[in-house]
Length: 415
Image (cartoon, rainbow, N blue to C red; front, side, top):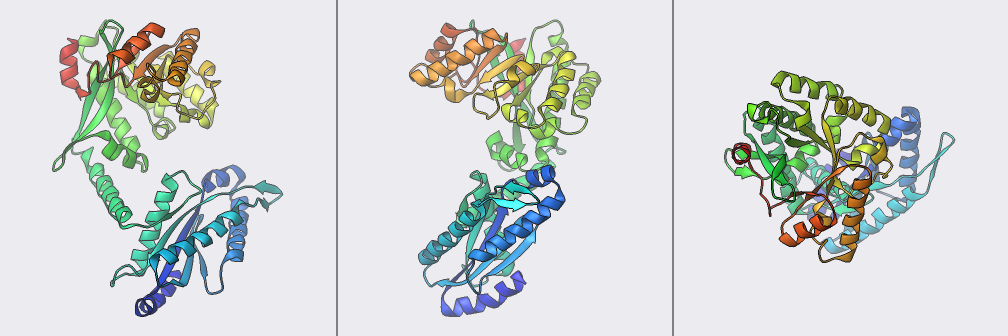
């Protein structure tokens, strides 16, 4: 019905030179609530949301459920000018937000909700179709969700182009792994005397047309899909292959690999890591797995069990971007951790900013009392290195001591 109504509205909107709008709405974190409270409660909540939205719409507006927790609102005859139409749609979106913020009483429970909304005005082109308009609204919705949820975003042509680019990158990345286009780069980690004591493994993409691509181009897209698991598995296998070389026998040297929460929670993750070590012949004590604080937000007991099993085999664990996450410091004494990585946002202004200096000093003191080693990321100046060395025992990682380079280049320097 929604698509049929849009098709009927388009010729009238063109002739009358008016702007209509499609708003697509997605309930924030509905899946978490649905999993926690059960599908029966989730269904009752969706019905309550539909009734709540319907109460604030104008006569002639169409409310449709697209599927799951996604709804669409079709708003005809807004205005003749785009800016006036945008203003009126903002008011409508605000009314819907306000309506959903009122707690829901469902199945004997009180539930609070928020929503993300994407809006597309139409027509924009002479050949607009229903699918074009729906795609634009969904693109705007994606933009609203990436801003943190609870937001409203309008479609802009730049969003459309960005969406097409994301799709293209994702499609090409799916073939990049089996085609052997990914490369392992290493960035040195050095002690206070400048000796290389470890390295972090970083991925680069040798694109056949666009050349060498930095991770910022494709990692966020991989994280939005299942590709991040495939990419992490590939990186782990490559690092194990490097660590199996004779040059590491008897040497106290580790290579750190980032582990995404999605990969960590995958069934059989721990067994897979140990199998890769066995099959390659690499020593577990040479491998560091970097996890983020966000991993501890859910099912911390399961996380502890997985980490403890791997730690008992000799694998080290590091908390990446320490200080930027949301979890409690309580996990530091519960998890089998070996290392904290101080995020570069704290390191880079520590010599000149008293607030950052105090935070870094506190992290170093905390690590010392918990018997954890510390890696400082983003060390780019001698002043930063001097500050860190003056306040604790720190391993440095940053352009001052070495940029990421192909693995073979770094290993040749290590020899």
